[in-house]
Image 1 (spheres, rainbow, N blue to C red):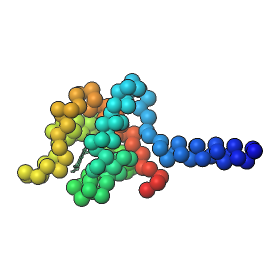
Image 2: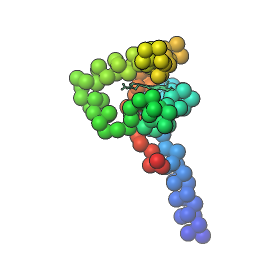
Image 3: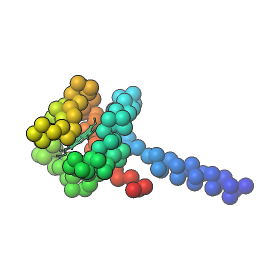
Image 4: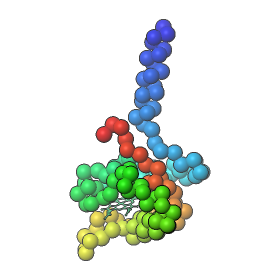
Length: 131
Ligand code: HEC
């Protein structure tokens, strides 16, 4: 019996580990949930669930949000402000190369506060083990 319970517990823990999502502890739960849902629905096709970039996204030139090199700017106080400014602009206005839209604008779907939370979320994204 003990063995079965042990197996059950590790199975549940294992499933939990796979489904793990980064937390946003200083954001009200309802808002955190909304942003995570928005990410899944709108951003995952290019940036992938964990932020590494999907096959399509990589073709379009997305950066790996989980990469240590990418995260460096978040740790540097001087760079952080500029970085957040740029990310905000991209989310609001999208990315174009000439007439080609590489990422569409989300400024009409996310307000200032929501964009801030989205950037917080991008900052805490972690590579998934399953890849
Ligand atoms: C159709 C594909 C696509 C979708 C969908 C998409 N993006 Fe992007 N995203 C890109 C591309 C391409 C870039 C530009 C990469 C570059 O040139 O650095 C980009 C860049 C960004 C950047 C700037 C990163 C940086 O540090 O310069 C942020 C932030 C970002 N996307 C967030 C989002 C969010 C949030 C969503 C969902 C609301 C989203 N993206 C949806 C393709 C996409």
